[in-house]
Image (cartoon, rainbow, N blue to C red; front, side, top):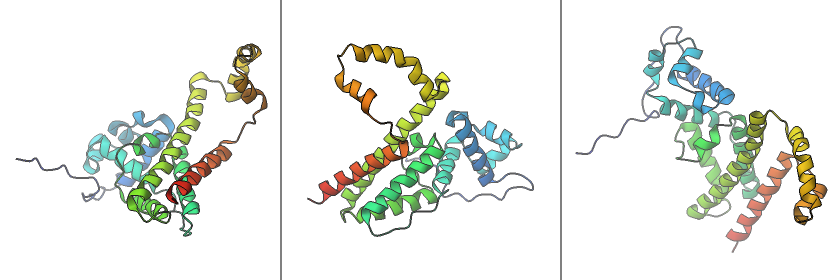
Length: 234
């Protein structure tokens, strides 16, 4: 006999909060703030309830477990910004999708790991997915190819944000800013370059400009969109 599927947080009705007790939205907001400040690992049912001065049992009245809480957090983060206005220009619309996703991920450093797995199915996430697919379908009416194009854009954004966040994590871990770290490794790098075995690396260190992360992201995104245009125009 097949076991019944567990109910979803998106299909269950929410009980009304008791007098002066926090509601679901307040618990989710507290969990978001905690994850942004200390990382997703810091989020527990007990900690979130405690931060609001509530008993853990009260939180369990609304949210069954931590996984459901994380689902609600992901969807709340996806709903913070308005959807980009469609322009009927696929390139402009996909670029808007990418920039909006990047802004959300940079605001919530823990979120990228959650979006890289199973799709989020909350109402805000579904609206954002629908908007993004409409932008991709303007590039190609083939829904399979449109989905692949959108996945390529998302993969680029996730990778770009991961690189930017890694620099932040390194700064937090070492206690050194990027400039301080560069000064600390400067003598070693000078020795490496003086040996003359890495001429291209020497050019990169001595000649290349340091590019602003926003400019670097826009350049990479243009490359992705150029590739999609060339591939799907065949």
